[in-house]
Image (cartoon, rainbow, N blue to C red):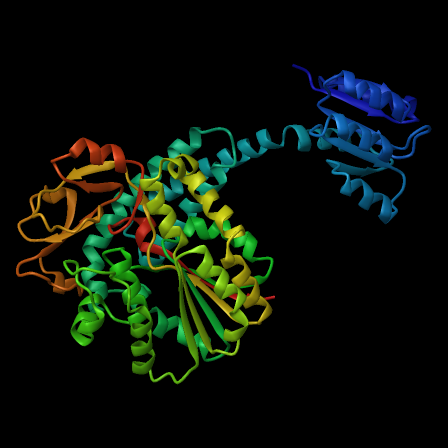
Length: 514
């Protein structure tokens, strides 16, 4: 079906060569020499794009534009004028024109404007698909090399980049290819972790930046030079950070953007306590038994983060002024935003924000949230929508206006699970779907990452002969009894605790206020 164009210009006869050129390209062009006729015809006919001369007898191009937009608000209108006066351009742009051209225009300019406005999504889709196809083989070859820690981080960033790029286009073919490549990457990453994790903790191999040394290695050096706010957003994945990034760039410039490693289990009880204490879980249990709550004890498992941070700063001999705030609901966030000025003289302000964690759990338990965040793209979009209407955005704006450095990071990420793996254990087996700790568990060894000696990876041993098992890639643990209920309830939910790119590789961002 041919593209229909309306072109109104009081000198339309002089533009006959332009019209013939467009018609030779297959476009249908209706021409008028005044704005009134253009407005009336636009109401009767479904035009794909409209060109208006700014200076016409009767009503001006700007007046015609306003009237056309009343009846056809979504039709792109291109303003053409001899004038380069700023107020005319501002008025036209404010009226939501699609483009602005200065006379004299040549046929190729018109053709380019049409393609840009009507075929943009198609051209972007073709270009994006073509570029990913070129990179596909390079990513595939990299996966089958003996990749380093840095190469794994770079590959993960590229996979996230292409996921965000390909979701912008309607063609789903390349997205399916990317999903297969990402699944392969996760499978190989799990093997990489299984082969190296224990050596990292012992310092026997090239060691990644891990969260239990983050405050000592990264945060304190920043605080030594500038007042700093550290915002830990629970469950924040790298792709979610990439969606939030353009919003924060209004107030900050990026000083450092990197991938760091969480610890196993990639669960709040272990990871966030390790982050603030500067210790691995078994070390916390040994040094501060009153601040560690084991799996089989009642009560919250993250009630002593402030105390663990205080112990960490004391061991580091840092005599600084600091604060710690944990936000678990809207009212607490609003209260902190309202009182933030009381914190601006501190050397370090630590804020834990739990929303993304609550979102992932709510998605598992609430049908409405599951429908709103039906897939990865919707989950990211919901995260952005929350941030834009949350007290956290107000807090971050106040951090910027206080000229503090801002650090954004997380304790672990999440993965969308889709493959149930059966585990049989005692009644008191912990409830997490991505890791289990206990005695006498029954499972298929090839389906899990098995750690028979928890102390080897600095985890509390717990009951005599207890072991840890971790789910891989998109797996989740279920019990044989009530199997179908658990499978139906948790398939395609977001979980954490196991081994995957999405859970272990988390963002660490340092931002400087503009």
